Amino acid sequence: MRGTTGISIVLASCLTALLWAGDAAASDRNAGAADGAARKIRCNDDAESVFVFTNIGGNRYLSYQAVVLDPPVSEIWPVLRDAERFVLAVLPDVAPTFLWVDGGGPEIIPSRFQFTSGGVTLHEEAVYRSDELHQVLYRLREPAFGMQEYYAFGEVTRVCGQKTLLEYTRYLDLEPGTDTEFFRTLFTQEFLDIQAYFNE
Image (cartoon, rainbow, N blue to C red; front, side):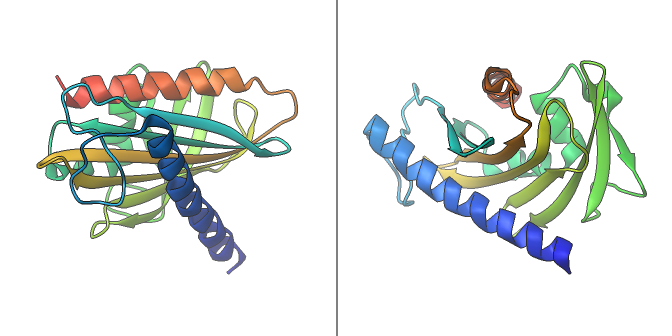
């Protein structure tokens, strides 16, 4: 029960952060054309991605990223909902090391998996998924790269006609002294890779 409560709290925090960061980023950028949704998204060909990385106290950080991708939700969601396919999109160099563990798999929630990056094996878990809302929540199961805790909440929404808005909110609780620029650089590169993956 305690685990479920903890996940609920983090999910609620991620949703709150997503709404806050999304509104803040949109107002900072003074976005132009939008099509319906509460989010202000540029729908022209030069739509830029949004990246907010902020300290929320102590060694805790929230990261929010948003990007408009050309393919429709029906093409993006199957990748986001499947951890193995998502790792292939955002971390192509480490994708060959991906492994479902403890009986996990793409259709099982919760489901554990691991992959190796920089000689470090990351143990993660898909803990929540909604095919109706196109939302997924991943978490780190064991500390790695200075992360004591890590949650990632992803969501896709139809925007700009048939395009897709991918939003990714992450919560990180880091060991004191951990280099946050490592995560800024990593998260930036991941979204460059996912744009290349889908917008080729």
